[in-house]
Image (cartoon, rainbow, N blue to C red; front, top):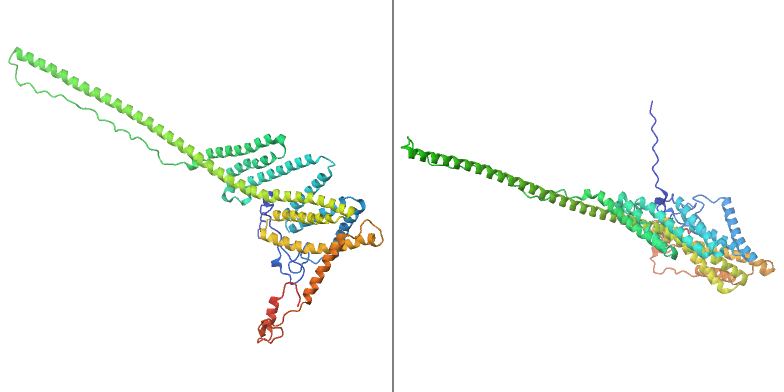
Length: 522
């Protein structure tokens, strides 16, 4: 009986603040055509690069419901313009602009789950706030701008703190794995948003400046504490210099030798007395010499002990001083290293937060304000029909489109060159299709009012300009097709169409296939 193999645990997924802006995209697909070159399709392409087919439906053939959805969306767009002219209100066409902006900001991110949700959230929130800023029904414009700025800075600080606590999202190198550097970075992240908040409202400027300086000083304090705790890692383990100890002195052995008296019996009383005196002084001098020797040895030994004690005290002071200085120096070095690592984490965090929070939110806010102003310009054009208003309408469309493109380019995280190429490719195709739809809407919505005097919309400069552009484009297209092509033009006989080929025409067929543009039929 075989033991069932236990299921492997799924890999741990990174938190959302680390995946935002670096999320891998789902598999890239092309259109349903068999000759579609998927290698030329980027993850942010909205249209196929080979056949200019819309890729929003996925790698399958569009269903009838898809075409119905597109038709319904076009009807909503037409209704928005119609009701703006009928009701003399900017709200209907503002809804059209919000839906169009949603498509510009979100469709290129359709293969990124988290990035799509965040970009949609940015756009919905900023568009709602811009509408309230335009009308000012719930609060004043000053209060709305102030609290929106504080909310945006708070969001920026919260995101930077989360990323810094996670090591900078892998952009800080080895410094991101240092927990001490992460703590320093988290403490320092409050400084930049606080300094930016100081410029929002004068009443709270001092408090914001104090908060910003507290963030910097707090980061330095955290670095100093970590440096003290890690100072032992940078200590010099070499033994400090010591004063050598004196060797112990040997004992003194001084002796007094006297000449021995003459042997024999004393010659008389005087000789006996002399010998007694000499013996007495001999004993006295010998005892004095022995006593002095012992005393001097004791004094020498006492001096040796004092010298050894003094040497030990001096060596202890030297050891304490050197060890303390080494520990202080080690703490300074450790604090400097962790502060530098924290600065690297802070820099990586600021760059990451600026790319996925600051730039998208600011761009979405600019686009939201622009479309509110654009909707009012459309209303004024319908009401007055002034020709200069068309220039402002076109400028507003271009500005909002560029700002919304910055939103998805910043959040996407793919190389900038690929994003610019994808944005240019999608903008070229979408503008062409948009021009055709605009011509259709202008003709359909303005026909009843112009021909039968029914409805609020009439044909005007916009309709004339759109159809003029279409007519010029059509004329240029057919003129280019009818232009005679040079025959022969310096080609070799084997390169001319219809010329015989030594391999039976296979080389000519391969050459013609290599020169054929993508999507063209032969």
